[in-house]
Length: 295
Length: 295
Image 1 (cartoon, each protein chain N blue to C red):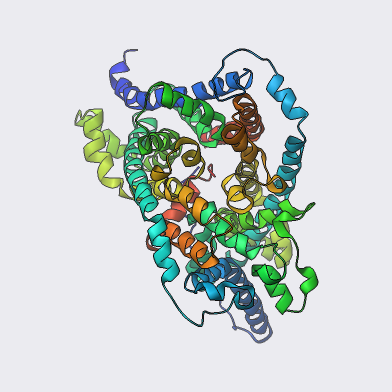
Image 2: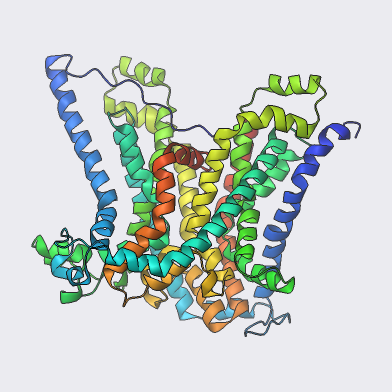
């Protein structure tokens, strides 16, 4: 439950220092890099398929051309995918952005109170939260949809935003709590000496050093909300309000859709999280390690 | 109580979240269990007590016993494969290689992609269609002259769910690699050095010094992968749709609610999922919280 990233590697072994030992190092190095490259190719294979198929014309998606580079590059499939998915992409942004912002702010407040402004039973409350992170959400979905209609909760995306905020409470509290645990007590003491109240301490002592935890949490929440399918498929009935995962499963998921359209749609739907990953991968990794308790 | 002025605000700050978790996690779980004991078997909600009727129905339902077989085969393949690949990757990287950051980013990137999008390309890779409709790996086998390896993949009658685990292994191996890498780096270098001074071969250093240190990581990995596996849903829907050959408990629950509108039976599955996952998670949470308190 620590929020440390993977520690840096120890210095490289000095290779080729001695004759025989050196030769051993070199051949071991070749095997090691060979294996690493082999696995990297395996992991990237689906990306290759996605990209080359997405720029093919329908004529080239048959088995005789499977795997080969397109002879004729075309953006037809991408344009079709955009026409089909752009409303759903819009919905996903309308869902993921507010839900991420609210749940990250809520997480920082909870994490602060659970680590730096503790009350009797704070650890019990934290454990009580943590269980909520692991439950299969199936175990709450039937009553949740029932409850939404019983209380006339605004239909569509607001319901989904609410659900992601509530079920995001445990993981966001966890990330902030372990991050705030690293703030030195002396800082808190100093604030106390100045007779600063809780909110003032949070605002002027804790918040200014919180940026990394905000980035880690926001990336984590954005990615899980963007990629969510289960909540969306149970909560959103109206196809016009579907987020992109549900829309993708419905259009590209159909067996009559040509492969080039399926692949460009899948890529299009993944672009926002992939961009975040490429730009801020470091923080993504930290979120993973912080949530070592989370899947 | 004298100190209530000091800790009171902290409790106040967390209390909205406490209420939300109490209602939407614990409250709804209880509500779901009540639904599973009711006679709500149509689109019209009913709260009449029906005892274990829904559970008895499941017990004598051939689809349910198939689901259990499927989830068992999927879980075993998925966990064994992911642990093996993740540990291998971490082992290859742990001593530090040039380009480590690049390899780590590549191995981890599938975590940023939704199962729905990944399912689109994996369905192409594992396409069971014969001859002129074939794609993906079967075409590769054919071109390499090992056509006899071509198979039905996820539609295979006995081993289909083992194939279904492949995309899941692809998606999560990087995560397990990150966990193991942190574990490897957590082994004090002095310990390894001491063993080498005693004349231990590099293999024995791993066997007797490094690997024993990784046991807690393996435990976390087992729990994380196990609870992901039991409730697996998106991936199955994306690749197999609603077919019985690939049906898992979570998919069956979805079908029961949306197509059959058998709420009590759906809630019974949800309850059983929760029980299965709790058996895994509760001891783990107790163990982790205790370890944290000791630290």
